Length: 226
Image (cartoon, rainbow, N blue to C red; front, top):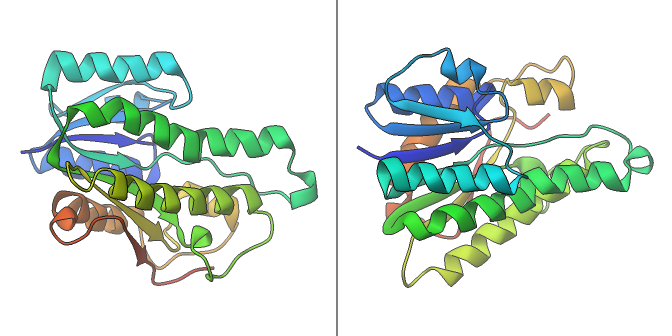
């Protein structure tokens, strides 16, 4: 059984992922600012505490937890995300920075925190978006979000190269439309063909086995892009 860290677990795909891993017998550290939804699951395999990916104190709590309870981490899933849906000229520098602090700088910071505890066979999976893929359809109002999702694609490729001799493996999944609260924020009223639980099942399988075939790769997981 694997030791798994997942961010963004208070709702949507992250919440579903935490439950699926736990039910399958894996040990899960489910991280989110609002830990109540996860805590209410009351599952013996799920551990949680309030976590802010932009805060150094929260990162220290992750280190302390690993040392106290696990010693090693097998899977790290960067699922937390922040979205601002505004016309570009109305998107302030502070808004842009807030999105990047969660979607890019937070991914880098948590990776630095967890990597010393990961083995050569470990797997770091970052959840990106089709909006961050070069040449894909782009949409007004998502300049900060989509560009940040493009940044973590490149970050994944660079880290895979840097750690290719020692591991772990790094891959990134660019998701299309999934019926989540974040999708509603980006495209109000749009109904996606894929549910959060369906996508979570795919991500769990990939996180546990994908590194056997992929490293430093971007996989586009999309039936539909609004």
